[in-house]
Image (cartoon, rainbow, N blue to C red; front, side):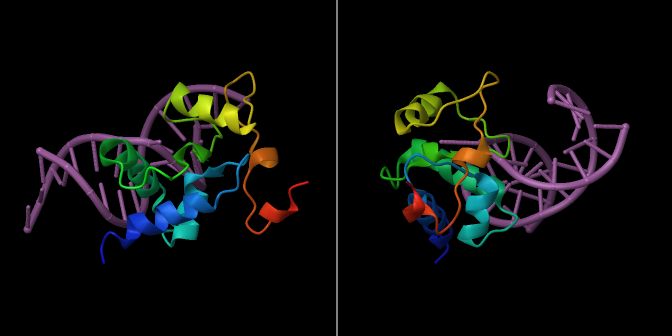
Length: 107
DNA sequence: CGGTTGACTTTCC
DNA sequence: AGGAAAGCCAACC
């Protein structure tokens, strides 16, 4: 199964709890592709090209700088999730960064 | 089948 | 701290 790659990526992205964000590298590592951060981005781009999985919260995936590589479209969705950007348009990964296994610890 | 591209990351300056 | 270059892997032409 070659497309298992995309499936894995989408599955990991779906695992990101609401109100949190994860970097491409983080998702790639959890998806089994420690050096495939670009492929994660490519997989996200595929969502807007053919929409194989419209239920994937791709907007919760940002780059290592904590900024959106897509545009205001993602920023608007993240704002709806309760995530806010700083003056430079970047997210504080130390606050909104996704920590695996801590999704239930949200208080 | 080979070169280019891309919603990236990391390192160096 | 911010900017440029190299590295990496998969998809596309």
